[in-house]
Amino acid sequence: MTDMAVEAAQVAQSDTPMDRARALSAFKFGDVSFYWITRLSAMCVLLILGGIIISLIVGAWPAIQEFGFSFLFTQRWAPSAQPSPVLGALGPIYGTLLTSVIAMAIAVPVGLGIAIFLTELCPMSLRRPIAMAIELLAGIPSIIYGMWGFFVLGPFLANTIEPAIIALFAPIPVLNSIFAGPASNLSLFNASLVLAIMVLPFITAISRDVFATVPPVLKESAYGMGCTTWEVARNVMIPYTRVGLIGGVMLALGRALGETMAVAFIIGNSFKITPSIFAPGTTISAAIASEFAEADGVHQSGLILLGLLLFVLTFIVLTCARLMLMRIERRQGA
Amino acid sequence: MNPIYASRKRTDFIIRGLCIAAAIFGIGWLTLILGSLLWNGLTSLGLNVFTQMTPPPGVTGGGLLNAIVGSLIMTIIGVAIGAPLGMFAGTYLAEYGRHDKLSSVIRFINDVLLSAPSIIIGLFIYGAVVVPMGGFSAFAGSLALAVIVIPVVVRTTEDMLMLVPTALREAASALGLPRAYVITRVAYKAARAGLITGVLLATARVAGETAPLLFTALSNQFWSIDLTKTMANLPVTINNFVNNPDPNWKNLAWAGALLITLAVLTLNIAARYLGAERTPK
Image (cartoon, rainbow over the protein chains, first blue to last red):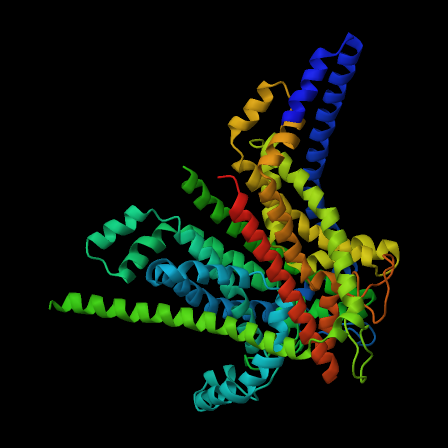
């Protein structure tokens, strides 16, 4: 800042009015150009979104023309069928939704539990290290989770837990088709579990942040009235932060829906829909990741159309999440 | 004791137990992952990983040199393109357009892009760069990474500039400084640690990204630092190695995974340390 004051002083003391005018116009030029540089960069963000939408639509156009709405309701995925390829998105859509729902069903209660543990139960000295460890884990690249799922978790599940569950539910109708064998290293369930473990730190970190916005006075008055820890969490913390929690969960759902590398290794890449969650399946992102590099023509266009569907799906989920999180931020600011 | 009290206490006890169990369950999984990563990674990590090229299947030995160098090059170019753009955009949102309509739209879109699936970014760059340029290239890979860097940097830059006290800007303006100079010489300096933190976090985010590189930079098995051709990189190399039953490839994949994780954790810890130290409050 001192250097600026010196420069400004030099401008003021310039001998001739000419020097002074030149210096001032240089200032003005710098000012205007900086404004436009920042403004154009900000526009870039809009441009990227526009570019994503346009390039996906252009890329998907041949497939849209070829299949139209039947793309959404066809289960068969046969890129090399004769005389013309048959492509349907039902399998990947089913897999994407199913894995995300199972993952969220596991990760949300556990994540909330950890967040309540961290804000209410954990000894003070452990809070910071555990919270920091969880935030760091949220940053680990998803391919690491996928690889671990493939090499370690998949074989473990297939050899121990899954046969037990299959045997347990075998005599019960309906459930025996949901938990039908054979157990395999590659299945929808394994992928869901890896997804759940991956979004867990994320959900925990967000819920902890949201719980931190609860004014201590509110909690203290509830405790003062004789509420138990659970009653404080259920009747004070969760209602106060409800909107933010739902926003955080939807953000995590957006992540789970679009996650590629955590599931690609372990899901089995099968486009068939089977009722069993222990059967192999596929998700939109896994299908794109595994087939795109070798695809061409309508097949490639069909994969881009899948990408477009995924983008629309996540866009809706993320928009809802952001709107909800914005509401809690506004309240916090007020 | 009153039966209602007893039942309330019992419920509380059970839920507390469940919360602790959840914490142990969650942290247990995560330590398990890190543990097996460290174990498998360290046992396959040797000097050869840093000095030799990726081997063909069925051969013992070999390393990851070309992939490590390729990853470094693409990450650096991606950040070098994305970080300045993101910083300028964040500057606009925090300094010029704090309250106008356009900024709130941009802010919203940016937040959505921040968590858009990275494979979609890959498809976008494939359609926008790879097809017109006529082939996979490291440059396209870097651009895909830059697109991921931008929203992260926009967000942190805006947040950090918002923390700079208005009085500082007013003081500088009162000295007669034009707006641009107030921002570059005063606001940037006050928020410097925060801005660097943002760039480090963005680097950490892209360092392990795999999906956007799968069909932009592709990967290869040899030494190449030509930006217009495919370039080997760690994440895609790991992806290819995992998908193959070759045991030597499996070990190298673990070593690569350990390297990526260490790099990402180091960047994150550095960012945290810097952010805690000098963030204006």
